Image (cartoon, rainbow, N blue to C red; front, side):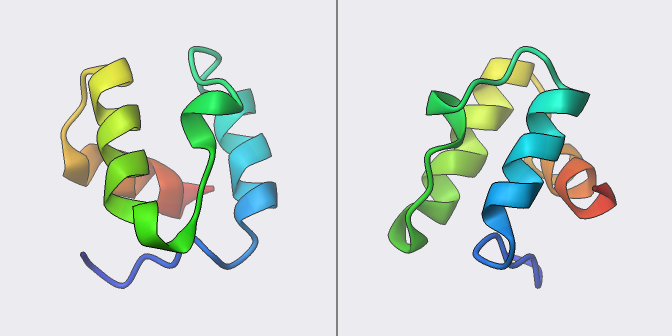
Length: 61
């Protein structure tokens, strides 16, 4: 999975994602290191976007 590092400043990224995409909730973005793929899939399903689009959104914040 690209070089995306969700563990670095995840709380800050989570807040920005929720502000940018109101459809996301704290529960959608619960994160543990072993669940990186799962969280990306949750966001992907909820927003109806591709994994690449989700990675692009996260990297842009």
